[in-house]
Image 1: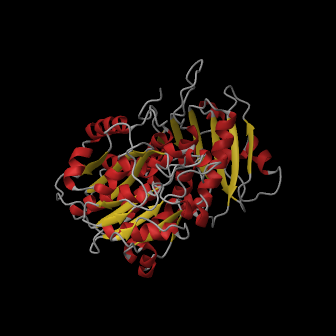
Image 2 (image 1 turned 90 degrees about the vertical axis):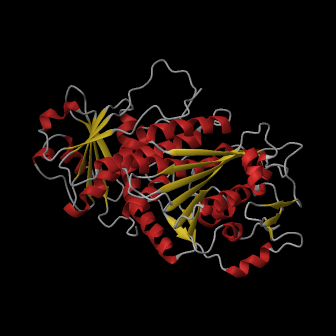
Image 3 (image 1 turned 30 degrees about the vertical axis):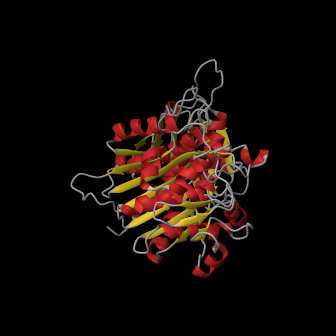
Length: 497
């Protein structure tokens, strides 16, 4: 069975100020050179060997990648690529991913790779980080239980040649966070069940000195968390719960500054309103939001970010069974709001409602939730970017800036109050959703905002990019880990205390 936690780390980075002699490149399995589209290989390092031959093969264009090999004992791969100097971070990552695919496609067993970004000095650190991030993503193996003759070698080190002032530690930890989110999201539902999730949380809490509290079903019943418990009711085992984790740097106040909330539906059958086959097939990935929140918290602890962070993970399945919740039931949430159930497959907003309300009781300044919540957001944006809803203009601006800088793109949607009339209920304070699916990503946000006090700045990220066939940007697999890179960029670059 696959391990609950990844067995491999992202490759370590070594920053080299100078350039090796071309005759000493046989210590590398591959060397990646990224050039602006209007430039050519320059300098003693690239004057000889295949670089000039590769460059003369044809006109350079954005995204063009060419490869050859050095005539040395290791047959070092030379991979030459071109990128526009005005390319946004998403495009830079995408081009870096093409270089990484070419290098590791030729040398899947590569253990040591060098990268060189021959671009204007002000851009060099970003180009270097993109090349590294792409290599770390391509070298990472998602969990599988297949017979192998011998485990393949994994990329262990990336040397950055002619290095700029790149934050190597930050790059490594962000790559690990993305890969952790990918790993957890890819785990089969019979491996990552609620009990296993609780065990891996305990392991990570010990490893990274996090405080962990598990709010099980009995405690949630005492608290009156009827919305979460309605979703959990059809499960075969009574092991669902809401996990509360905290990272608090020494000397910081107990009150959290930011709370991260994640939807952790480990498998979603749709419940009483059962999903058809194709719609249910990959529903083990419906916990991607919880993976993002958890991976972000772990990375923050590793980087010792000077911010008190909470993470709240709503961990359950949405199963079919004789006790599963049904349309037209009236459920009471932990904050006293009553909910008319319309469709059992709108379970994510039910589980998040109580989780958001409990997170708000700790009075954080900011709450950000991550959830694979609605198909409507996928239809609106496809899987190339994710949806953003925010109650606070400054928080929205900060997250959009982080999205642009990280290459994990967001599009902000409106959610004005008049949409509430579509959630009017004759039997409860609010209907769970509309009968029709029009604008469901907006209506889901209007529903969720009932559980976050107005004085707390809140953002909801609808993770339409959690999975995408063919990968996304620098990540080659269908499961993208989208959100961890974005969240960490926000945490590390934010200006507010």
